[in-house]
Image (cartoon, rainbow, N blue to C red; front, side, top):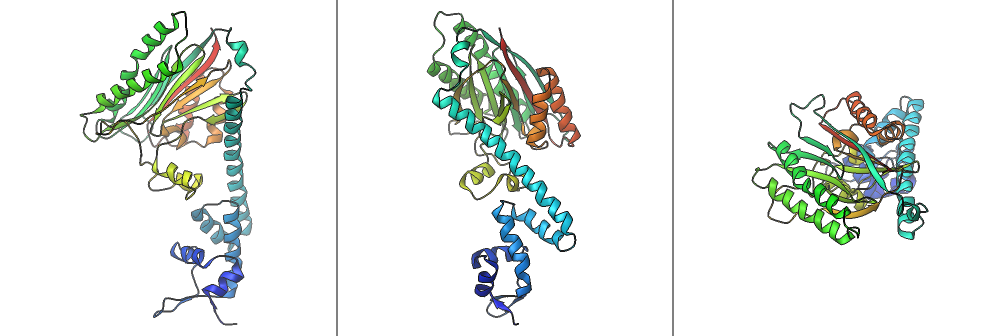
Length: 364
């Protein structure tokens, strides 16, 4: 049988002509022949088996770069290719579990089904905390900042020549909030949500101003202000906050990065994002630029038994989500959790600075 045109091969393989052209450009599925004058692509019918495998792997959400590796492997070692598919699906299930946990948390928060909320209105709560920043095994200096106090938890990841100063300046700008929160809690009436968030927003403006003048340097920032029963969250950049609650562990911040915006748009998946060349490019940060800083601000109702983790990308970019979760769940206290998380990053090569803050919500 002669070669098939791209249209005919598309029908045989159940792939669109547009997809075939894309896979050709990527080296994933090359045509058997390309006409040197017209540029028309022609395929051998024997290529349909690889094409169908590509289509099936796309249906289970495997990134294209990984699909090429699996298809190449399938031609020489089918068992090894099967193991790669099994490993991919295990990662998908872990990510789905994390998203399910977050969805359950949001449903309960928004529908008022948190059964412990009323009882905790009369139960004084406090936080037990630990913080640590580590240079890692590759970088010459440490530009990550981790801070934990009785009212404030904060992680900053500086960048640029003066990134360390930028991160420290941002966290220092938030520290007066500890005194203000303590004074507010001494009043008869609890601080109002709007007042708390306004205070955080003002502090972020001070932090952004403190970074101004450091040239091309800047910092990300994720911080939480403890108010006795709630945590007010401020977040900008790609440092993160996670929550372990009732056996579920999930991210409660949203990365302000180019790759996260592509994931949100559906043009990239999480596994592709991990190796994307633009994964470190920030859309928002504290860099003293002309425009105002645009942090995310919101309140979280605290529950007895909650465990919060704030960290820089030196942890989550090196250590898989499942490993972070197991460590946060297993550690007996915040000090042990922080030490174990830093050790995990070192075991993974610690290519970047690492900052971790862990805080438990406990009876006062």
